[in-house]
Image (cartoon, rainbow, N blue to C red; front, side):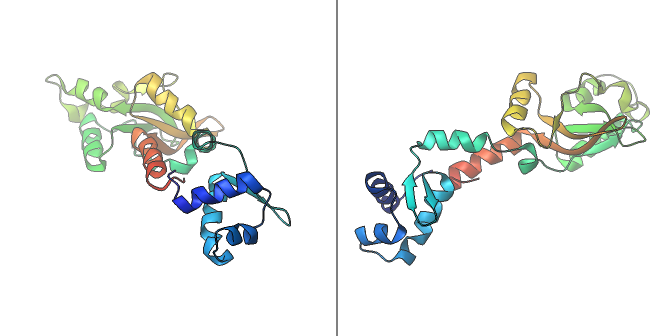
Length: 209
């Protein structure tokens, strides 16, 4: 997060004089308390300062890098997951290719008649199935899909960093976000490299998540 010169001044004042009230900070800067309120709110929400009622503001002692790390370690999959694109295990490879193209995704999640996760289809799976003279409209996706237990999954309460690590380690484009049910997994979302990139963009643009 890039601080304004005034915010840098506020931090220095709090370092030197904390705990210190907002009124006293305003006096030192020859400004009104109302003028400083947005800056103090940003510095407090960002973690540079902390505040206690009837005591005032004090410096947390944390660097920008430490604060960023803390923020990242608090983000969960559910905060940035997107809507999953699913197909039935009996749908044809041709229809799956059409779905992937129309939905503009890199991974399809395959479900059974109970809507439980049974497989994953990647671009590579569909491309491999297309390299031949077979009729793609006659081949069901359950023949070519990756099956359990070889599917890498995540849950919505998982930390985003841990899920992102799975994407890197497995060299895949997306993970199904699942919820445990009595006899399987229900797909409730998807987490992709694009979702992870959005986190970085939010941090770089606004400094806040």
